[in-house]
Length: 261
Image 1 (tube, rainbow, N blue to C red):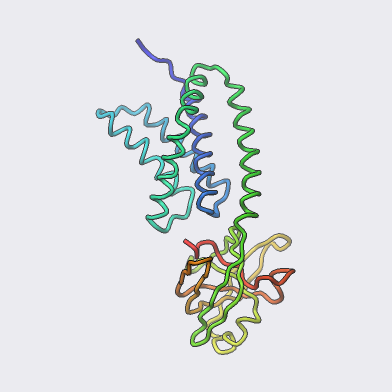
Image 2: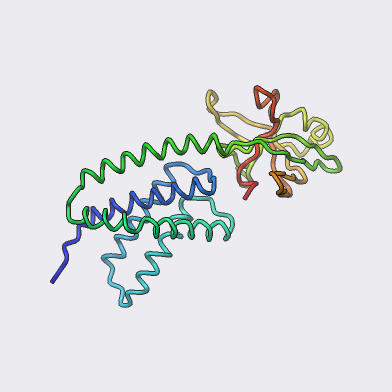
């Protein structure tokens, strides 16, 4: 007795489901990562799964552990900029829970596609999921954008202002690899006049401007207040812009999402 296995179909199925799992992690943890990185993580996960299917491993339980644990961890490391074990553990648990909850559906899709049934249905379903993902991304992006109170520690001085938590801020210092927040120059003017030698320039690009440089400094620290929770981060990089960041002037700083992790 033998089973006929279509490796291309298994690869496609795993690619689709890994993409859905990584998108779920992105939404659940409000992570700023590109669709390309999500696709690369999904592709690598599907490739490794298929590779393990054809590689003979004496002990079956070892192969199962690699498939269930190792591949998921590799996908997370490739897709997201993971800086803490806590996020890795929480993201892995979320993937495990979603996989368990969708177990029945996955089994149905797997068995029918493997037997070359309903293949067109599966393709159409994947396109619908892609469209749904785009809608959810837009919806949650608006929901996650929120304003909070922050206190900047500028040497011996303090500055309290409103800041926008923007998941779209992907600016990093190319030298120190630190996340960069953006603030209106007027709130930093006094500090800058006393610390001119500490100014450096951060390259950036945005809509309507391919390349540019923003003056930036490293300040003592920041306290971020959200509801009943406050988080303090030391030695953060802030870049400055002249003029207002918000048309309604309801915030004067854009926080990098990595500061909230």
